[in-house]
Image (cartoon, rainbow, N blue to C red):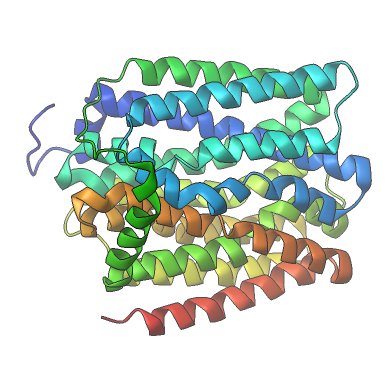
Length: 403
């Protein structure tokens, strides 16, 4: 790895590191296809049922494993080889996408198939923070953690932008079967990239009967640390009240703006585009890393803009507002992992990242709530109410996590 000096960009050093580039590229490919799958699944579910709640049920399946297995996955990732865990997840998602493509091609695809595939994809996603994201930060080294995570978050924002756009185009042009076949192929490319990473880690001895005790120990460490408590609380608020809006995005676009699948893809890509631009600023930023206040203000800003976008009178204005909201999600995404990697004890980092994954997994509660609100009061009011509730939740988290 090249020596970094004050005149040299940290991003340039990161891009010269082979292990970082492979992990970074693999994450970009995998995440882009995850978003393709989610949008195509949502559009298919809405086309089949006409119900926003049905769409939320299908998409909720992807987050359920994060809630039920996220903390345990973090404990396992400290004992088993993280590289092999990551590759196993990529192989599983490729197999699931292949099966969905075959079912769609033969005309046998049903909602429960998409639900099961969502569970499988969610199980692989459960290891994202504790395996690939931790490996990215470790490849970068302790002095470039924030820049590495910010650059990785830029890629995630890009995939959340390109993935839904591609999903809308695939659904409208080549159909469900081809979309999932493409996803399966890309998952395999990501697997090949990770297979070439040289990875070493210190492992804890895996004692299955101690896994629960290990998780409880990590929870005690996190709850005793104000910054780690903040990360967990903000993660819950953002995933329950903020990001759950994506579950009813197909219904929101169709009902509020009579949008086509491609226009819905554009709506879904707006916030990630804003996050991409803001994430680049964080990645190239020098000086002391941002901290608690940036995480809080970014999260509140996103929820405020989301409420405005829900009530926007036109599609272009809603898109513009969501682009502005992306600055807040960029700060959240970068610091969610960055603060854990900087503040948590090294022997507990994967477990605390696993707890963070569990907090992300609480999103299905928000997905079900926003789906029910959308069926009862319409998507506009549902998203606006959730955004207001999220701001109130963040205020409570800020008050409860003061040092």
